[in-house]
Length: 257
Image (spheres, rainbow, N blue to C red):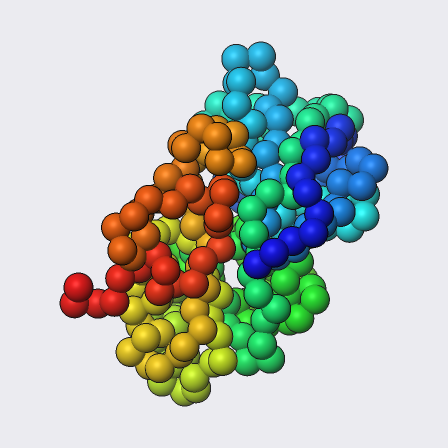
């Protein structure tokens, strides 16, 4: 999806941190023009306030207003731990918005999210509410759904059965597809989950399936090639350069191939 606003490096200030569960938080940054050009699916490279963390961290925009943006962040290492351990008012550099965005959603949209895959959906459902099928390993790990529930309907599946359906987000989708066929499915989460969603959607005749890939990144704009990922044809794609949002058929080969 072509986007008119070019990425810029902006100075931001850490304005709020809300802990949503163990190692899960909502991070809010404020700064002039920080939300300009943000669209659902795009991401930013955010500075880590720690001298030995040279690389910026890629984070999907959850919500964006003119001078304020929000991210959902999971502690995955020393960089994200340092970011979430910073005091309010810490100055940070932010490079963004980067990447492409999800297409304009149809009325009959269904969203599937796994774990930190809740990250891209806030702005999308704020503009057009759609149900989110959210899967996690346990109820303790469903904290990222809290800010989503303030915006739209969220249905749960947990692998241990502690919240919602006893199963995965894919099981939740399978049950939903026995009742109706959505116009489109948008998905973000572990690659294996997205692959399973794409296959299930194809078997039920859902033609529009879009996925947002998650990968480690060094630069965010196609120089370091650290986020290279094979597509359905076996060719390599640089996720930050022509993604992270793709038609599922572009990334996942049809079942049986």
